[in-house]
Image (cartoon, rainbow over all chains, first blue to last red; front, top):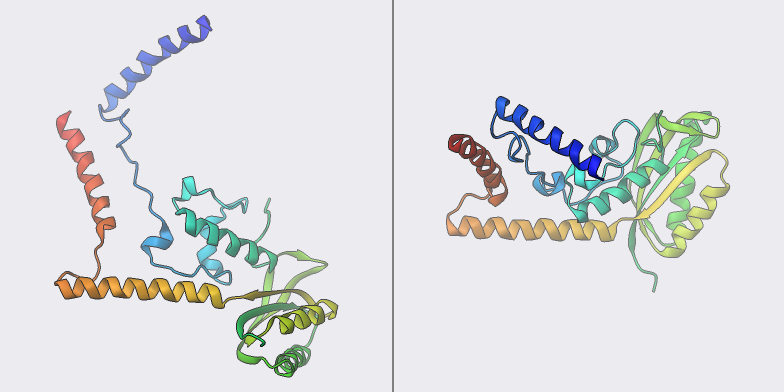
Length: 100
Length: 147
């Protein structure tokens, strides 16, 4: 426990110092963080079609897993409809279940 | 009593099947739909497509989309028939009228919103969302200025 704390202390100031040298706004979260907005809300897509492979593809990156909405920024309602759309497309072999 | 509902049916025909066989399958589906008091809305043949993964030993298949009105009994019959048809390697039958209704409602609601804005003399688009993006950018600049 004590060891841990000690190590943290030693690394803390160093890290802060480094960022101060580069730019003072660094540690603050306002750097490059874009506010994520739901693609379907902004583009005003009411109906997520399972046949539209081009629209679904960005949501299943290389391993073909559905990306969580904390990363994609899709709102809860659209994530739910997107989920069913992707699953339907997978059944029809329009999208893969897994890729390796 | 049979309700009219809109359904979408997609089936994948095995790549070995000839074009004639695909056409025959379509007429069979058509016959079932009309026999059970449904009506065809539209048909699309997507042609031969590569499958995203292997189904059985197939790597590609011919996709056919059929949209029709009908009752629940009709879908039961179609489902059963497609299951026993050997040349159909996969099929999906979904009801779409509810989803389309919801989509239509949302579109109507948005139109009302636009009309209201126009009546007020505001530009039809340009909700708060886009503004927020710009604000965030400004904030970043302010932070830097403080430093």
